[in-house]
Amino acid sequence: MSDIKNKSSLSEEEFLRDYDISKFERPSVTVDILIFTILNEVSDNYRKLPSKDLKVLLIKRNEHPYLNKWALPGGFVRIDEDLQTSVYRELKEETNVENVYLEQLYTYGDINRDPRGRIISTAYMSLMNSEDVLLIPGTDANEAKWFSVSSIEVSTEDGDFVELIFKHEDILLKAKLRRTRKLVGTQYVNGLEIFEKDDLAFDHSKIIQYGLERLRNKAEFTGIVFNLMSELFTLSELQISYEIILDKKLLKANFRRKVAKMVEETDEFTGKHIGHRPAKLYRYKSNWNLE
Amino acid sequence: MSDIKNKSSLSEEEFLRDYDISKFERPSVTVDILIFTILNEVSDNYRKLPSKDLKVLLIKRNEHPYLNKWALPGGFVRIDEDLQTSVYRELKEETNVENVYLEQLYTYGDINRDPRGRIISTAYMSLMNSEDVLLIPGTDANEAKWFSVSSIEVSTEDGDFVELIFKHEDILLKAKLRRTRKLVGTQYVNGLEIFEKDDLAFDHSKIIQYGLERLRNKAEFTGIVFNLMSELFTLSELQISYEIILDKKLLKANFRRKVAKMVEETDEFTGKHIGHRPAKLYRYKSNWNLE
DNA sequence: ATAATAGTGTCTGTAAGACACTATAGT
DNA sequence: ACTATAGTGTCTTACAGACACTATTAT
Image (tube, rainbow over all chains, first blue to last red; front, side):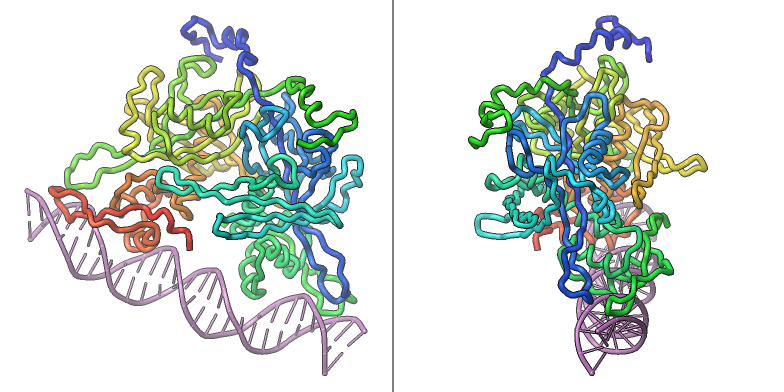
């Protein structure tokens, strides 16, 4: 700590002792967590590979505001914990999963995003594999459920929209977002806004769509998708995961060439009695992007 | 607003009326702004093109903490303004520039990042062209200066580091960051931490390096660099801007092919009496990425 | 044989990188 | 003629995309 004096001839120590941080009115800060996983759907034919779905974890609110609406897990950041610590705490409380992939997405700071007052929220995205997911104990107290997500682009004369659909058993939630395109300086900047009040609490549909887009972008260039896989997987399972995220079919030969440098063979195979040729199991090569 | 009652039989209206947001201790929230531009350096030879430099705006602190150290512009978010509004206000106060490119970078929320108390800061990056910069009035009161930045990667047995060097006339500032690589789940996640207390206030060297990396990444895929150009520019000027940001030489023919789809010709040329063939002026084609 | 998935070989077009060349202005 | 920048043509290589083919298992 330095001994330099300021205009009022106070040293840093003296300044900080007298500093009253509460003289400005402060906002509250929360974190919201977007948790993705990929789960098998029930299959009709034992010979076919199970079809899979991208899932997001939603929680039914048991308090105002948005009472009984579905929302992302999250909560207030405590005064004595780092932002990231706060997210890992919430994640552990909600799913009992620790050491998983976590990435900061965006900070939402509009004045009116929460009717309780000025609340700024930093959104994070977490990815977990189905094995971890299966270990999550039933948390019926606060009703957490995995919803499959789909996101459809719709272009009309009134503009471009994104329609989000969430499903869990017989529960169906919808949201509609408008794509905005604003000229700032010489540059068009793309944005998203909630088009009509939807089935999710707060601005959470916007966060989910933003996370989906980030996941898609990163899937093309990084190994982010492997966070959704079990430790051992077949190349077909991996391809299906990519197809779900990118929302398009891929050609097998090309896909295998592309991921070859990211995986390493094991000498294990998928089990017998599956009605077709067994597949070799692979594992993620976590250092593939170093030379 | 719904009429549903919660466990205490309160409607949403009643709940919100009684809701006391101040019951939890709240952090303060600030914004920090990383403002980049590209400026000409003085030239010795009238025939040569002026050499250019990437600049960042820093402000000399006139109060504790970090009194007399250089810092990014920024300030507290007011309770009645959106995050983005707050940033544009600070930007206007500091540079008198409005409608420029602005992008949210990251939110820094470590407990001890500010000695005044718990302060969470959302960092933004702004890009402006040299013409706007030249309109900025002298703000000697709070001593704002454009520093040229350079960032050098250093690998040793002790780890990988980034050395940042800032220069303005005879002022020279240095900072050293360590690259971290943490295994979380199956995935390595890269990070940056301040290695030894440096010449910048707070964690601002980390923010600057993060912004530089984001700028570099986006330069390869988007038209972000055009925010640093004047309305009309030659392809050589554009190429020099890309070279400064990517920190490598590019081949002219290849570069021109690459940017061809992003620019449109005008029928103007650079002035006469420059000792060499005049160049055609181009303008940014802001809709190049639609179909 | 049939149904299903596993896995490989090869052609084509496009884009990136390297390099060599021509054009124009001013002194 | 010389120096400096402006601007173009073309070769090679790597890779993405499309497609056709072979291999293996269980019923």
